[in-house]
Image (cartoon, rainbow, N blue to C red; front, top):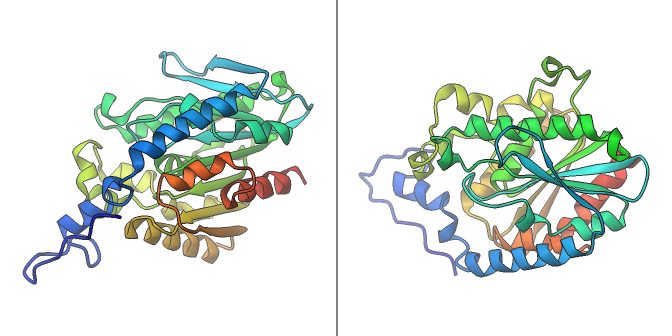
Length: 301
C-alpha cells in the first residue's frame, strides 16, 4: 500500500498547481508509491539475466571516451532488421544496461536488434542532466552510424524508455540531428512508459537536491515544450498505480501530442505500480510488450 499524501494546512503555500512543497516532494518520490520496489528491481535484474542468456550474439561497444560510455548490442540474425534502442530509468541516478534487458529475448525472436546504453549517474556529474542527455544522444548517433555494419536498418530505429529513461528517450526526438550531420531525425518510432515530460514541477520537488535544474535546461529537456518535433509514431504507457504526478504527466503529454496531430497510441497498465509495469516487459504477451511489438511492426511496414 502506498504512503498517504501529506495533508496540507490551509496556510501552506502551493508550489505547483494545488500541491504544497510536501505534497510535491511526496509525488516525485517513488518510495511513497511502490513500497515493493526493492523486490521488484531484484526480479527485473534476474529476469534480465534470463533474457540475455537466450540471445546468442551480443557485443559490448564503446560510444564515447569514458568507460561508462558503452552499450550492449544484441545482434539480430536477420538482414536489414530494425533496432530497438532502450533507455533505462532509475531517477537519472541508478540502473545499468545489463539489468534492464528484460525484453531482448522476444525482440530477438522477432528479428530485432536491441541496443541498451549505459551512461553516467547524474549525481556523478554534479547534477548535470544535460550531460546524460548528451550521452544518450551520442549513443543513439553511434547506433545509427554503426547499423549497416551490423546488418541493421538505420531507418528503423525505435527508441524506448521507462521512467527517467522515458524522459531521456522523449528528449532524443527534440535533439538537433541535422547539426550532427544527419539528414533527418533518426527515430522512426518512440515508446515511453511512466515518464516525465515537463521538468518544471520536477525542478520544484526534492529531486532538485541532486539535479542542478536551471531555466535553460528545463526548457531544453522538457519534451512537452517541443511537440512539433514529434513527427513519428508515438506510444505512451502509464501504470494505474503510479504517483498522481506521473499520471498527470502522462495525460498532459498525451493531450499535447494529440493537439500536435502526432500519430499517438496510449495504454493504461492495470494493477501495476511504477516498477511492476517495467517488469511486465519480460512477458511478450503483456500490454507493455504488445504495445512495443505493434510499434515495431508498424515501423517495419
